[in-house]
Length: 75
Image 1 (tube, rainbow, N blue to C red):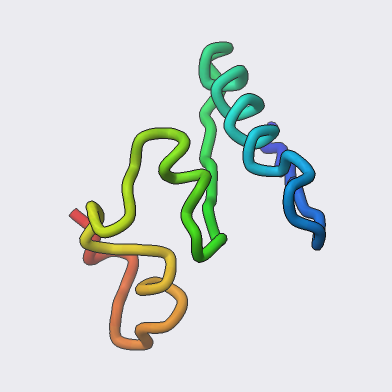
Image 2: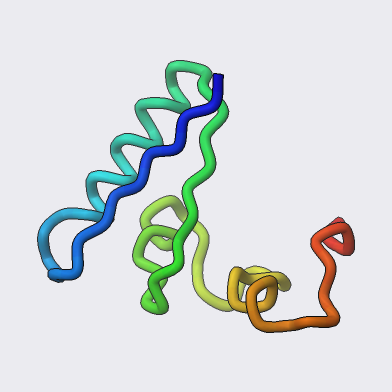
């Protein structure tokens, strides 16, 4: 069964990123398939799990904004 968990709050500094990182790690350790999606322009979630800005060829921005880009082009 698939579950979608969303952590959102308009206010900054309330622990959203920390909560998502810890929840994602806990689920992954329980052998659950886990996808963490970082839509924050600052990329704190990505950096928090060891993926740094500029290190990826394809970004969420690319997928959302480039009409000519297709998901199946990712290798």
